Image (tube, rainbow, N blue to C red):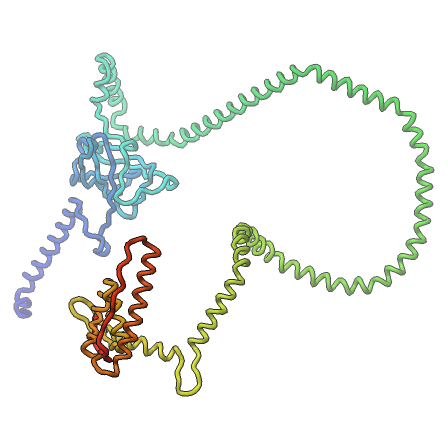
Length: 490
C-alpha cells in the first residue's frame, strides 16, 4: 500500500484535494439548506427549543423553505412546521437555545420579507416580569397578527378612494426614487422623540388631572366657607372681644410688673436660706461618694448583663411566649384532667413496675426466673408449629389425662354438643379402652360425679336465662379405667 502511494503520489494528492473541495462545497450547500448538526457535535452543533404560536391564518408559511424567526432584525430560529387545530393555524418556531426566553406578554407578527410573500415571524419576546413560557408552550392567537395583503385593504375601499390611493402610492414611489431605505432610517430616528413626546403627554395629562382636582377642592372649600359666613362673623367678633379684654387688663398688667421686684427679692432671700441646706448636704454627699463609686461597677455590670439578655428576651423569649400562649391555653384543660388522673396512673405504673420486677427476678439457686422460661416457651411454640400440610400448619404436642378427666370430658360432651365436638377433635382414647383396671374405679366414679354436677349447673344457667322446657339430666356411666394418651392435632 505504501509502495503504491509512493508510485502514484501526484494522483493521491489530487484525489485528496478533490475530496477536500467536495467536503467544503457539500458543507456550504448544506449550511445554505439549513442543515444543522445535533447539539452534541462540538463547535458546529446547534441546539433548538420548540415553541408554538397560534395564527388566525398561516398563508404563504412554508416550513423548510428558509422562513425564519426574527427579533429586532436578528435571526434567532426558523419555522419548523404548520398544523391546524380547531380552525386555528399552529406554527412551530424552532428557537436557538441561547435565545429561548419567551414570556407571556410576547407578540408575534407574520410579515413578508420579499415581494413574493417569503414570510418571516417578527417576534417580541416580552418582559420577564410577566413570567416565562415553558419549552413547548404556545403563544395564544390574541397575541399574534397574520399578514395582511394589500388587496384586502383595497377591497374595503370604494372605487374612487381606491383609485386615489393607487395614484398616491405610485406618486410616492416615484418621489422616493429608490430612497426607501433612507426614508425608513430617517423615520426610525424619530422613535426616541416619539417616546419622549408620549411621556410628556402622559405627564401633562396627569398635571391636568391634578389641576382639576385642585380647582374642585378649592370650589368645595369656597362653598363650605360661604355656607358658614355666620360662624366666620362670630369668630371675628370673638377675636375682637378677646383683644378688648386684653386692653382692659392693661392696668392690672402694670400692677403685676410693679410687684415683680418684691417677688424677686423674696426669691433671693429663699436662695440665701437654702445655702445652709446646701452646706449640710455637701459633706453628706461627699460621704456617700464611696458608696456611689462602689455602686457604679455594679451598675455597669448590670447594664452589660441587661444588654446581653435583651436580645434573648426580645427575639427568643417574647416570640416563644407569644407562640406558646395558645398552646398553653389549649393544654390547660388537658393538664387539669392529667392532674386528676395522675394518682390512678401512679398506681397503675406501680403495679406494672411490680409485674415487670417479678418477671425479671431471677431467684437464687438452680431455679430460674420467668424470663429464662419465656425463651424456652418461644422455642417450644416455634417447634410446635414447625410442621404443615396442604391445610396449613400442624400443631404438635402431648396430652396427658387421667381416668376421671376422660370420664368428665365424655359426660360433658354428651350433654353439650358444641363441647362434645371439641372433645372429639382432641382425638382422646375412650375411657372403656384405657380405664378397665380395678385401681381406676374410684377415678372413674369421681369423674362421673363431676360430670353430673357440671351438667346440672349448665342446665340451671339455661333455665335462669331462657324460659324453655328443662331437659332431663344425663346419666354418665363409664367403666373404671386409667389412661395416659399421647396424640397430635391441628
